[in-house]
Length: 450
Image 1 (cartoon, rainbow, N blue to C red):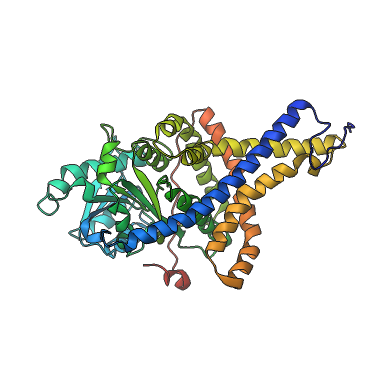
Image 2 (image 1 turned 60 degrees about the vertical axis):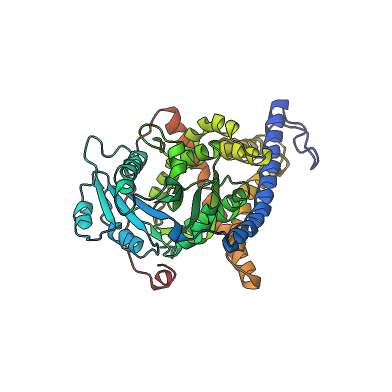
């Protein structure tokens, strides 16, 4: 074992080669900035809640009857969940609405199930090869063209201005809360608002793995998204996003607003912000979706998302052109850099372990700032999100009990990021569809759902 001078708490890296000291110092800086970002977003989330309450209570607030609500459900081999999703969308309370299911070349029972549904509000767009199965963005663009060419030229809806048309994206396993339009409508009182993302829940959250996914979405919505709402930079998600049609039109290419990306929702949200629009999060309503109960397909899904995040780093020019505050711009840059920062600190942690095993410098002397980073970036958001889900002593105890298992779950991010980068560097962009699991009634969960 190599003998090196041991560092102190104020200079933990003393005795290490200069390049390693610099690398660990950068990891420490990332730790500090991550903590600051987390605290700022938490403070801004409270500001956003007050702002949204004022909007909802304003006498000039618009209601759901002021808009045409167009629900779009992309569907590819969704025989397990499509009937459930459509039935719940039928129950959504909206004075004027249209349901569009894009059957993207399904070869299971999905077409038959859709054909058996008789509803004047339901339109089924069938896509066949070679146009079919070109990605979610292509399916959404097909529906966008249909809205302009057919829905807005019909006698029923031809009077609607695109400013007063809201496009709602719901996944084929989605269960939208019936009162969602009533909650979302006031956001669009501000003509600058392009999109509103509602909270995402997991409806089969009766297992540890699906419970952790439910907390994960709470972290994103209640901490990061609400904080960004105060700046108008909340992002759109793949499920439960409400977009003003005129905003989509303003960023549309010839094929449509959405571009072919693994995370097309992230792409469209950033481009809307670049175009001068605002994005909000609405925490008082939600869309529920099916969680994955087996670790392997969940890891594959997170790897796909991670690869999409690596792709999104090409959007730095979009962030640079966005007309937002300096603080919001820094947050957007940090969001795009997140996979690289997470990869960097994971490598730094591995380096600290190696150094501790090959020198007389203890692990904690070299790695305590990196360990703090892991706690800040994984346990910190989970702590805030769990605390927001409960109140009083019981809520505090629940938070403390469940924080550790959720933090362990969140560490799955790091190998997924590494694999996603490897796939991106080798040009591997195709993915097999994640199979749905059979719908199993759960009385406790069903009692909370529409």
